[in-house]
Length: 189
Image 1 (cartoon, rainbow, N blue to C red):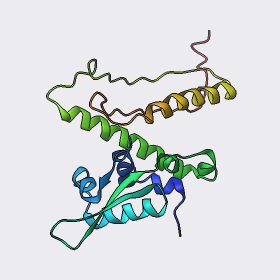
Image 2 (image 1 turned 90 degrees about the vertical axis):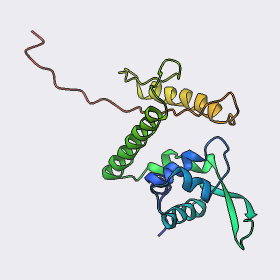
Image 3 (image 1 turned 135 degrees about the horizontal axis):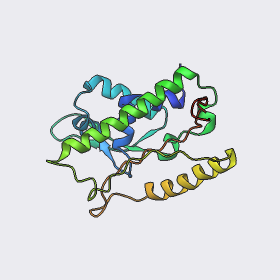
């Protein structure tokens, strides 16, 4: 059975592969394996196959490996195919949403840990690191407009190719309705 687009993408290894290929990057399976050394080679090839089969990755090139009778594939991310839309999540269960959100948080934590471990002492000011949590009061229409505005900015930024003056950065965003807490009668007097 073919996995749903959400199940295809919301897997720790496949999400990391997609992340490695953002910005128009082209990598071979060997280059990807070097960046995810904890993933066994057979598993990596299985995940690459699933992503190609799901059209999230495309084979941009094939090269003959020197001194060997092997052809090496060069993979790239199809960003449009890797983007989830409302219809991709329409029939998602609570447990699936919980699993997807947990993976999102774990990936965010892993990215931040890689940042912290990369240098002697992180400089969050110079590195333009920011993490915030805000409470907003918005109608459904205003929340949809906020997401549309953020998406437009994200798409424009995501279209920029890597270059010497551009540093890879991660943007994580969540927007969800708050659940009103019951009022404490002792505080309202």
